[in-house]
Length: 151
Image (cartoon, rainbow, N blue to C red):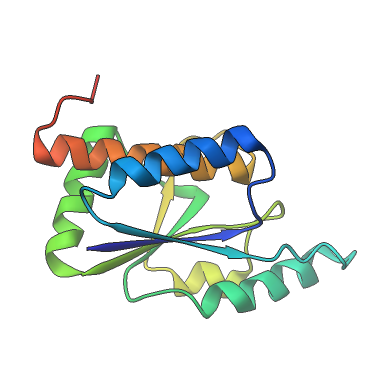
């Protein structure tokens, strides 16, 4: 199974890059993970234009089963998320998660993604959210496999 994380922006802080590396290492025993970093379109002043330009790049990277990480998405417990991931893995060899940029994503991206997921009604920096998503994917695989990690 392959999991793609399509992320607008890169990880600037060393602690974020280290955390990502750690979760990628842990996940390597369960699946292949591709991090697809897209350039932030911060050269424009118009927010809708920024979302449109970033959205065009996101749309090039979505797959038949794509989750948009979005405040309007469905919230899961870790156990329910693991069950969802296990079910999807049986039907799809590739699952994609989209983490938009600072201003969110375009309407075209929202309509192109099959599912929406939210971790909270709170807003998180997209770089932090990427680490949280990797951790939850790892947690889901440990739950699925019965490994000791989920607390």
